[in-house]
Image: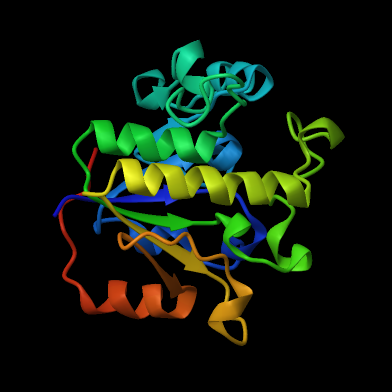
Length: 203
């Protein structure tokens, strides 16, 4: 099974050392992640952050800028009103295109029900992360619904969402898909520590 890590920028991943992921799968990052960490591939769909990335020293051949049509939700999901997608979902789709069948997703905090844990961004208040980009709770509900659709469409893909340690499973949204599971950051760390290192996905 070909593994990819998809790095969102929700606050839950702030204290997890992303360097621990190296050698365990291909790493796809979103938006401003490159400021702090160099993923194997970087994905962005919004013009302000795309402009910033293009002006940076991040390798051009590792930056994925999806075509305009792919920056909106799948037309099969809603043929009449296609809503803007998000870089995290686009990163998942790029990983699937490259043949990855296990996606371990960090920093996708829309999976958490409580707004105090579900909202925010590690880059909030910086360039390209102004008030106009701030997520509200209804955005998260819509992301849960869309992610459920994608899980059923790509039923041969194993989606694993890494979530913060809370009290019980009722504090997380259930996507009602057999190919979606969850794990805590501490369990991800233990899993990586138990695995042998593999050759990096890209040099």
